[in-house]
Length: 162
Image (cartoon, rainbow, N blue to C red; front, side):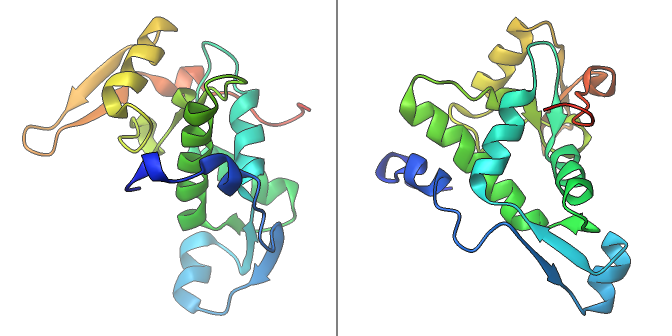
């Protein structure tokens, strides 16, 4: 996102537009890629609520959240583009509030990767994760990325929880 200081992320967080909804997709490539034709669209606030459920010491990936939403709403998959945008909106809304914290730093990209689009970028997310006992490792020489080591062992299960 750009110009974060000029945006009202809390207003964006509470703007559900026409979501939640399930849409039937007809593109064969999309159906093949995601394993079905029922695509769920979750509003930004649902991502915030899911991110708040992840307790200290646990982690989630955007992929995990999307899979949970799809299962919980009778869909084959959750729309991936808005998922990434809405997770960032939840993070920036938390940053702008300064209170009533959403622990966004516990939500990782696929494969346990840190999210450079969060407030404070990689460095802030890394500090918060390491303070909770996670080990962050660097990968790559030119295209350097950061990941939580053995993140799979710390994944939060969204199933059977309120």
